[in-house]
Length: 221
Ligand SMILES: CC(C)(COP(=O)(O)OP(=O)(O)OC[C@H]1O[C@@H](n2cnc3c(N)ncnc32)[C@H](O)[C@@H]1OP(=O)(O)O)[C@@H](O)C(=O)NCCC(=O)NCCS
Image (cartoon, rainbow, N blue to C red):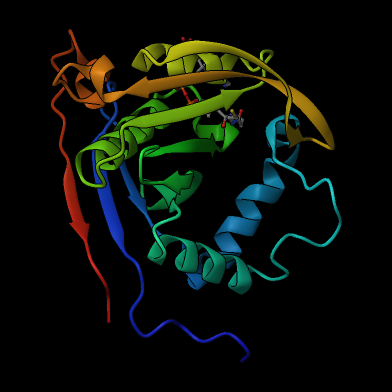
């Protein structure tokens, strides 16, 4: 086999509970996810199509699933990315990736996400985004998290509204989505916005639901 598992890989586990009590787990993508991942992506092609990133030039995407896992592992180990799949009830139901992580005087990143249509509307992505945001700020020391959304994507606009991301306005033809350059509305959160609270606090504020957060990070053998 051309691909070989890195001897010391990148690993991160984040777990939590949605406001309505659904337990979720965020973990790195594994080569073993190929069947489940390709199946959920294929079943949700129409659901995801209008919001999926596409390439303006041919042949830039990883060629195989193993290549994709390797790219995620490499970018995560290099500190450029936090790439995670979303699990609930032991099933892979989506993805959340923090990309373009830059330190120095920027300390910022962009986050993208999706879930299968079958689990939409259960607060899974707001919970995943809260867990990831708190990790990026609390553990990696980032100062700002950015999310870019097509203005017509009402469901994704609801996600950032629930977590109180600030609307920074429209950026013309910003990203190549669904085969063309699309306008996006940028939303951001900085540590000052949180004033000492967590993003999970924002999601659960006023709710009696218990929340749980476990973080296990470090190289795996
Ligand atoms: C956007 C998306 C990630 C939201 O994730 P989610 O876990 O469903 O988030 P929520 O449960 O908070 O629901 C968000 C909104 O979806 C809509 N929604 C509710 N139930 C739904 C259902 N059964 N089916 C579809 N949408 C539903 C509602 O507008 C809801 O907002 P509300 O809670 O204020 O009513 C998800 O809809 C998705 O993956 N869409 C396709 C890919 C995509 O748009 N990615 C983001 C690109 S920026």
